[in-house]
Length: 442
Image 1 (tube, rainbow, N blue to C red):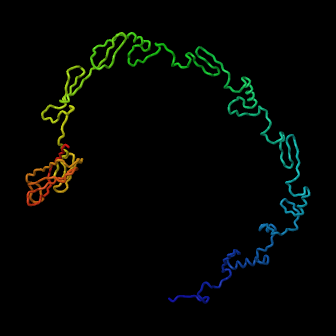
Image 2: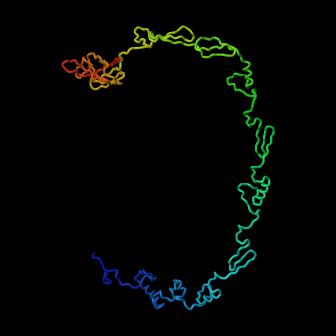
Image 3: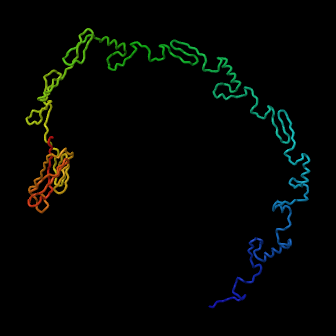
């Protein structure tokens, strides 16, 4: 298992073996050969050297075409010994070109001498110089002399039937001859009359002069031509004449006034030939006895007077007759606020006040509207709990009491407690109660 080695060239390196020229490759980075190995490159060099005794491709013998193919810049050198040109594209020498200038002393064919010629109104310049017309001393066809019938008009105003100057002038001459102007809106017109119609010629219109106006709605009419609407249905006739006839037939100069009464005069009827008569209205009279307060009145039918009592006659009536006969009641104590309150401070029924439980046994009564002073009457009472009032110990109380305190214009406070044992302080308890606040006159 010790391995095997070759000792053919006395080493063990395959990269330094002896090779023939055709086995050695070349890279030829310059691209000088077609061969890719040394043997071929040497053969190409030998062939090139045999052709012109060197290996330089840039110094080969060339013809002029090959030279010009590489560039036509002579670098300032003169080309000598050139033959005279025979073809259009042949090069020429200076001597040859100078010999061509003998005709006009220059070599410019664009400044040669030319000649003018004329045929009628056409003038021609030789050597391609062109031809112009001198018929009207210019070469502009848009400004030629024209006759009037050749000049068109646009006539934007529509004043003529003709479309050219000659015709328009003829129309103007004809119009001017008729009335010495060309205005068709100031022509002479004539008036004519047929009956009540007056007409102005040339479309001047026609009016009627039957009643000195042209309004058919204001004509003079006879009474039998004027209709009436008679919205009240007072006539059988439908026109003024008939209505007047009906009024004349129904007219009566006699006036009869009956059933008159005494009273306030509201009008007087008078007519020629009769005695004036007053129209009166009946009057209801009204009076009051300021001592008894009884009101008496007489109605307009002239019957017996009637009375009305202001104050009732009952003995327990607290209303009396005042100084002017009106009903009067003297000032009396007034219930200002009242209420029924449960032990927890909830109002079962309350008037003009509110209630709040402050703590056990204490309550705040507040008026809806404060009084002017605190001199009002307070009445309070509690529910009879039949000797079994709620208390703060195991035994119920049987001697509850209620009091008020802190009387203000805005309200007062209430306290409820049990005083069963005189030896100890009163014990506050929550219990249903009622209150009444009374205000006195003045």
